[in-house]
Length: 302
Image 1 (cartoon, rainbow, N blue to C red):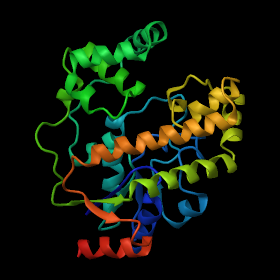
Image 2 (spheres, helix red, strand yellow):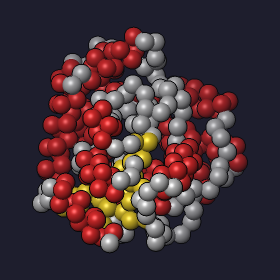
Image 3 (cartoon, one colour):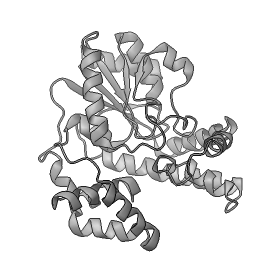
Image 4 (tube, rainbow, N blue to C red):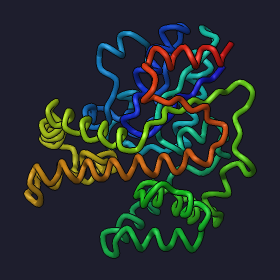
């Protein structure tokens, strides 16, 4: 059985997934689009070393910061890991909030071409000259379905979608399976739900904890090691705001407030996306402990 634990950022997915994995004697595959990168630990809220010791995790600190990644690549990796895990256990657990990554598990994408480096360079030049909005407008023209469903003006996803269109002449969305998204009989999806004010407070406190835990120092070390601040992997909420602080554009106080605002907006987009999926078994996280939620999930499995 495949168990997917989803929810907006800062909703408590990691702890619930770990408790379930311990109970079911299985492993966790992270369905997060940034935890797969090395070095960016604090800002992506990776499981702690203690958590990684408690339960085996996959898709954590796998890629170099310079490597490109996307939901299709995740889908391929996850399929192999899942097969290996299910040879040893009856269950596999996915935990994360990246919407396309999770969708790829429920409704796998059709095979599509690998990235074309010349197209990528051309699109990056256009962004520098005309801004990201110009590419987004082009995407709206050639693939309105994908542009409409995308969670925000995501640079990497816009470039990927236009690259595929440039190579094939077909909309990126045409490579996604058509029809209603519905899990198969071997997949159960659980979501953590919080009242919006409580979730936003959790987000604000998490950001404060990230700063206290050394987010600024972590990014300084990455840049001092020679990594470019222009990397797509660093174009991530938390890191891109601290880059502006380190560049002297913003005060630290302003950068922190911007991180909180951007994270709340991201959570709102996640919630909007999840509302389309009527198959999610929602857990009212403000009314239950992680232990109680674990028991509810286990009861549904039986």
